[in-house]
Length: 269
Image: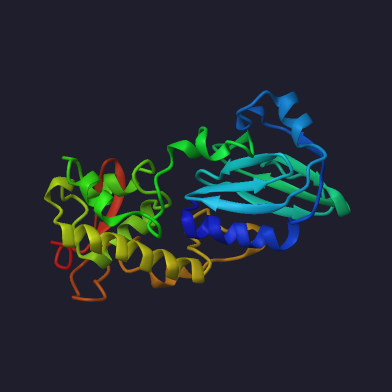
């Protein structure tokens, strides 16, 4: 699944090529992705210029003249930029832009979502209104008070986008390893210094992943064939039965909150 670094990579790629282009037409081949009235969705978007492309957590946000198009890539969503090439099976939304450019949304599983919101209040309406702050901006004292009241696994807490935004399975595993915290520990057992370290570790992991273009794992690649390289830096995620690079203990795969989870049980007590 694309997480914060992957979505940021996509944002940067698309920003370099799409800013200033006008949406001239839209073809929708799978209507369930559009969480609005389809006719209204099309009529409002057509004619608007792409002014900027932002990101909040895992959401990609096209800032237009009057509206914000908010997109979640979910499990396997990605964008491709084409010029009048034949449509592929898994391209479900095609934006026809000025300069004869087509922005195509490709999603094998069809889980991606698109919402259209007014620029006046898009940050305060669903879905962005449900997003917690990213590790880069979250208040450490607030975060500690939030997790210290929860009798659930710290991994499940870090995956909750309402509490902290942008972390998914890959980067939660890596953050917990860097912070030396076992993913099954309950939030109420996390001490203040450990809570602070979680934020520092998350920032460290995310920054390195963004710099390397994210992780290309299983079905995920960024648009335009760009491949991330952070998977070469992973310490525990996907490393089951391999020796920990720090202590040599064999990495285990367990399940926490229904999610496959990788852990070094020596480094992460």
